Amino acid sequence: MKFMAALIHCFTASGMIVIMLSLDAVWRGDVQLALLWLGGALLIDALDGPLARWAKVSENMPQIDGATLDMVIDYASYCLVPALIIYRFGLVPEGFEVAIAALILFASLYVFANRELKTKENDFRGFPALWNIVVLYFVVFDTSVGFNAIVCVVLSVLIFAPILIVHPFRVVHLRPYTVAASVVWLGCALAYLLRPELNQNLLVNLAFGGASLYFTILCLYRSGRRPLQRS
Image 1 (cartoon, rainbow, N blue to C red):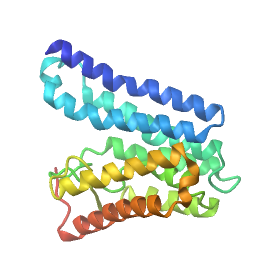
Image 2 (cartoon, rainbow, N blue to C red):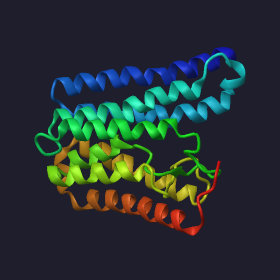
Image 3 (cartoon, rainbow, N blue to C red):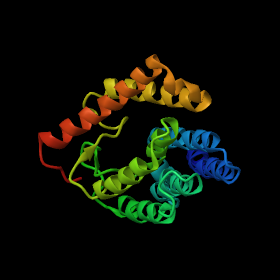
Image 4 (cartoon, rainbow, N blue to C red):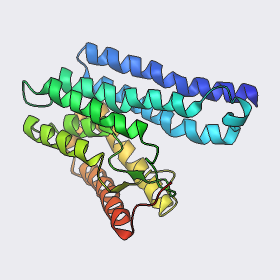
């Protein structure tokens, strides 16, 4: 089991290699490829937690803090690379690229430093700095730079807001439906990146919009049903 724990830590750490490849795509001006690599990092992040709990890595390899390792990689994939994409590809008004990217990076640090980030039911308190997903919407639907800037500012504020954002796999309430919506959302996102013209496809847009709406309604419901629980 010590060997298995070491393999799982290596699997988590492999996320940084995927991030490097995403940065290379940003460097070369290929935003779709950069987002595809970020999708790979998201997949690794989704799998390494359950694997680590199954192998009891904290018990079998206690000298390595898997949570810290995970947070370092998450900050790079959820915040740093998306901020660079916004800057590199001019997704906000000219002259505001550095300011918006800096705001994202600065505000998002609170997410990773917040000891009370999650409730007992594993909801996130405030917007959990999922800038990789935000940038995906910007790129896929070619939203205006002014709209993008407003969204970035609003979401940066919502990092500190008293709202709940559902963890798609760890929140038990309605989990089968949430997992199903996550699979639909991820499938549509992959389709958009592999075939950008699908952003004009009614069926794909309805599926993607439906999954997005499901998460929005669920988060609003859980935010309003009772005061935020302390973890």
